Image 1 (cartoon, rainbow, N blue to C red):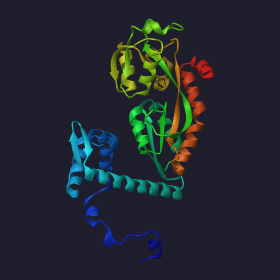
Image 2: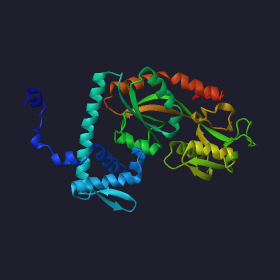
Image 3: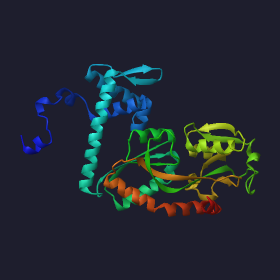
Image 4: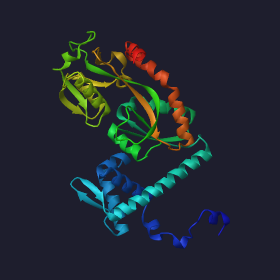
Length: 337
């Protein structure tokens, strides 16, 4: 055996788990890890961009190889058996080693090549692709994996250290300690159809909206929580007509006359100020929030992650200017809040 092998504690082939090497795949173990972590075949399928039957089939194959059940079903949720828990711990250790290897190799190659994993809350999808596009112009050899989900799902990913970096608004209470970097303002505004009688009025009292029907994002959305909290602080319970799982669906519902909504001004980035949705000048709005780039506290970033972090933070002034273009009067809020 070479001295290099000896110095790294190399295990001779005879001691390797030949059966598992021959009959399992890294993809199966990745599917298994996601299923345990998320507690659901369906959610694992969503995260890995697979169908639910594919996840179920791969888990069954893995169980057959192991010769023992890896999950037990409790209602709609799945829970690992004792054997499944042991396998999960081993998977986590193995994937951590592989992630460190990937980061080391990326650093050796420099930032000309490498992989970047980013998790963002739903509304950040309106500007994140543009940042990535400009970043790729500088570093075309970089591959990216972008996960878009609501605040609670991204909080889970942060706690499990799934990605390199994350873009979030307010830090969820469930999130572990993080290193956070200010990225851009995130004003929350009240939107209405253009034919609504409130359009064009100035400084509308919030109380006048008490009887207006509202469309909110699903539970787990940070924007929903902020909006409801703003109403409740004034002793108002907003009249909920509908819950929808995407900002675009809500904008279509507004145009259809189904109600008003509170959304991020970033959701109007593409259509601009002349689109079919109008902004209302309401007392106490906009709610001035912020976007942050974050990662688990103390996490060692790869060269690619560091380069993207620095690049994105340099774009902050331009992102604020774009919001001022959409709604010029927002400039006063930037100065006072």
